[in-house]
Length: 145
Ligand SMILES: [Zn+2]
Image (cartoon, rainbow, N blue to C red; front, side, top):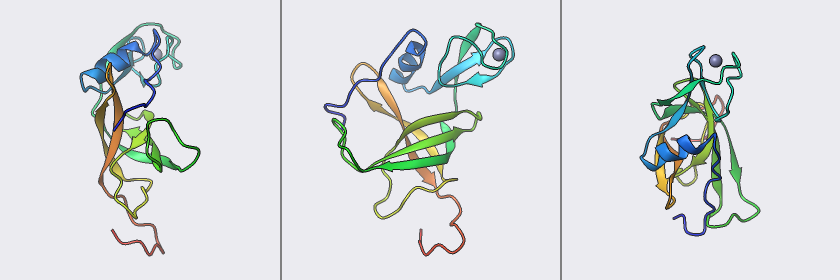
C-alpha cells in the first residue's frame, strides 16, 4: 500500500534510475573510463573523475549489510514499524531501501540474502527488498528460524 506516500525526488542525475525502476529494472552507473559501478547517482566518477558513464542493469540480489527499524515518528502513507536496510549488492555497491514482508516476530539479520522487488508508485516504482534466505544465527541467540 503506497497511498499518500511521497514520490521519490528525481533530478537530472537520478532520472535514469527511476526510469528503469518504472520498468522493473534496478540500475546503477557504470564508469566508461575505469569500469567501476557506482551508486548513488552522481555526475562524476569518484574513482577516476570521469564524466562518462553508461547505465548498467544489476542482478537485484544482495545481502543485508546493516539495517534499522523505524518506529517513530509516523511517516506519510506508511504503516510502522518500517524496516530500512543498507543492502550490499552482488555488484559490491550498497543501496538503502525498505525491507518488506519481514516475518512477524523476526528481526532482519546482517548477512540475510535479499532480492529486489518494485512497488508501483504511479509515475515510477520504488525498489524495495525481501529477505529470501536467512543469514547465520548469531552465537548465543535464542531465536529460532
Ligand atoms: Zn571511473
